[in-house]
Length: 256
Image 1 (cartoon, helix red, strand yellow):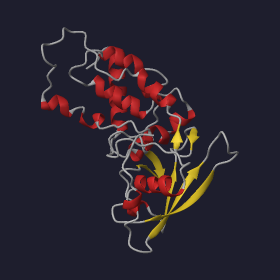
Image 2 (tube, rainbow, N blue to C red):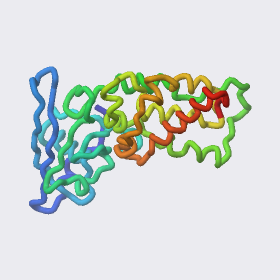
Image 3 (cartoon, rainbow, N blue to C red):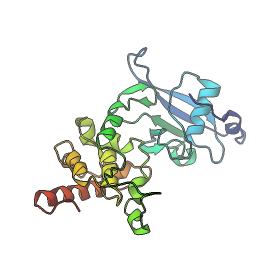
């Protein structure tokens, strides 16, 4: 685990007697026959996040607790969890907003294989992401400096760029947990991000990747992805735009 600032003392700056219960999902498949919940009493203070509370448990009460984190600024997506019944980023979630009564319940992302406690297996997630070729493809001669974009061209990809690949939408989508070959909302959102990028020239190649039963047509427009996204992205918009592009090409209009 990466180095980090000790948050234990900060968490203990709570008013006397102010505590809450952090109910944490615990499961180690190498040791446990069944999963369980473990309650920890944690000092509360104004501004305390769920990630800080987890660090308090790790450093002050139970060093065996496992969870992922990295940037702590809602940019990397590493600390996505199912917190008090909602998909959230632990670093971004205030304990005050997540409490149900005096309890904050923390689970790993649902419908994903648990590696240990709050850590889930992301192998298939990243394999699907790799399939959409998440990088610019341009076969024209490279310019001396950079390929320029106008503000209007950049605006088209603003929402898709904000995706932090946290896997909340992947976990929330019935099509994903029923069929692991489905690319998933996050991958299709990123595919659309590159498809409409003015600097990208691989329009047909990108449509080929998503024009199949495990691409855009596996989406049933349930909107779980948009509801789960902690960044407020409407992945369904990107998927529907890709569907329209695929249909247009089939009708002979070609990529936009």
